[in-house]
Amino acid sequence: MYRKTFLALAVSVAAALPAFAQEPVKIGLITTLSGPGGYIGQDIRDAFKLAVDMEGGKLGGAPVDLMVEDDALKPGQGKQIAERMLTNDGVKLFTGIVFSNVAGATVPDIVDAGAFYISPNAAPSNMAGKGCNENYFVVSWQNDSLHESAGQLASNLGYKSAFVLAPNYQAGKDAITGFKRYFKGKIVGELYTSLDQTDFSAEMAQIRAANPEVVFQFHPGGLGISFLRQYEQAGLLKTVPMVLAEPSLDAVTLKSIGEAAIGLNVSSHWNSDFDNPANKKFMEAWTKAYNRMPTYYASQAYDAALEIASALKATNGSLADADAFRAALRKADFQSVRGKFSFGPNQHPVQDWYALKVEKGEDGKPVLKTVGEVFKDHGDAYADQCKM
Image 1 (cartoon, rainbow, N blue to C red):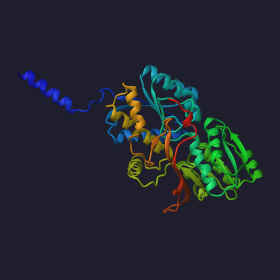
Image 2 (image 1 turned 30 degrees about the horizontal axis):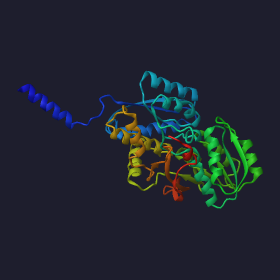
Image 3 (image 1 turned 180 degrees about the vertical axis):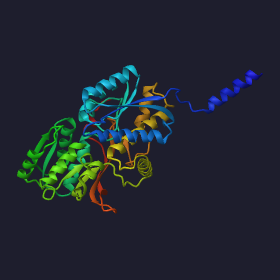
Image 4 (image 1 turned 90 degrees about the vertical axis):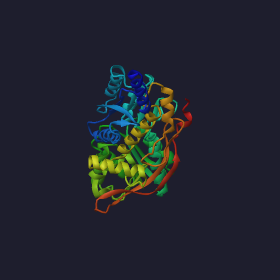
């Protein structure tokens, strides 16, 4: 009698508990934590971890084991880390990569192994169209669309000629392609710099000689800080304005450049001043946890964690049924810090883009303020090439 009562009680208790997997879900976060772009990966790591911490070590009710590794901006190193996590640790869910050259070397191996990759940043064009994959999701943007917004903003501002520059790698090529796709004026100069370049004096001379109405440049991380400082030192910031996409003027870059950045125009899908409940919650939690301004990268990584949480919740914390987990990811059933969010047919975002401007804040320090809208429900140029 006692045994029957005990068994009945055990069954009823088990039925009342969530049906989550017993083992934590392993998440491989491969990102750039060292070198000039190290702060980008640090923000991605910290924002993803923040989402986990806010749920008491879980995502979507499922306990998670977050495994963080530094790719050091080396494609080969990123590839090796992914292979080790897949083979030795049995990781089936990945995120974190900052740079497109690392993503190009790493993500194909991940998805070919049947694992999932959720990008909080890098989204090269070759993986958005014919090279798309059902296990590859992007929460940030497609590389081109990020800079398409800058091209449209430059046109909206009435500029008729532009000089464009970007590093000579996939994201840099996508940046210039994207800007040119929507800029209606004339391109009077186009240069590709090195990904490890520190001296831009030759480029400054060519910009001065071309005498454009505006300059568009994409240099993420420490590259952007170096470029903007040298641009100011060359006296160009006062004579040739810039229109930038968000990676070229994030919170870290702005703090480094200071008042010289006042007046710069920037296009973005997110800003710290967005007035929606999800963003307010994120900003409050981030400030309390880290006591610094988040970058765009942080907002994207936080959203990536929420996206993963939504799928884990729908599948009771299990990736065993890949089709079910994939279907849950496609729904994007989470409240994004940027507001409206959905996936296009290639599992890249369809979202709004905004015009920002650097102004003096209430404390006298420069701050990015949202001043208008550039695109509404904007997808990317490669979605129709994706066949899944």
